[in-house]
Image (tube, rainbow, N blue to C red; front, side, top):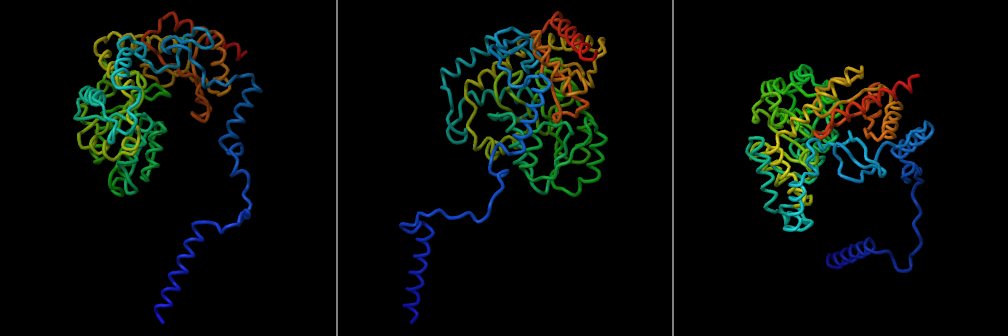
Length: 440
């Protein structure tokens, strides 16, 4: 009796599998939906993000203010640029040392393209490794005076992937309240507990560590070298002291500070006179002064080896194209060969800060190195002034709520070593005139 039952059982299981794999022949009738779904959840034009964007655009039209974003630059963007066929004084470029159009940097890209082709086609662990990757990473590590470095194809993904891999649910990430979005997303990916502390406030950080350190396994503190919204910098020595006392890691995001701060452009560590190995993780981008695209992590050999083998944004992402790595490698060398560029950047930044202050503009806490905001206190006013300046062939981006609190809405000026004092004077005079016109 058991054999017929077993045979029947097997036949019924086989039929059930076939029914799951294919619809019965001739049964083409659509299956009715089990429930009705609100179109808010099925249409992109009903998504809250699109609704917010639509509201912002409609508000701008009512006020006669064009969309200030996605301007098309028709030339190399440095101290000047071409927008709409007109040459403009440009304060919306991170090309701080003017290296993106340096002949040696451009030629390095051409040479790498001709030698290695336009793409490495796959992730570097699989089939994308090229000698120029190693040269760039070795140069970064030597500049930081640490053991090793690894270059990612995206600056944002550098933070997301590094933090997402290193931390887990039993860990804690503490960061400055003004930290970049990439750090926040990295923390979310990791599953670690995340807390922010008051901007540039080591006492607030120490309070959190004293209260929470023992509840977690790994703890990492993330700060920036130069905050691009405010143009200010942390007291690195204090943060190093605190992280050592509480046995935490310290990560410094040098997206804006490397090649900008310090007498030789070595970044926050030079500016604050801190040993490079006192910081556990150095992060930076290649897209600003280094004139390429992507990001890097520099530190001890064990850290870098882990990221090369396990960080998802490196392991599963295509490798950096050679013609992107080449210019960054060349820019790093030009920065060292032509120190006068950094001196000019520091000089013109201080001049802008001083002249803005003399005119009574609110420049916040900016230290006057490459980034100087002028706080106007209203998103509408900031957008209107940006548009008015563009009519005078001056390009500067507004920073609006919710990127900053409404009372902190501002114009954000990025200085370039090729800016002249005449350009600064002209810009501040026009800004003063336009602001007064709107106040009257």
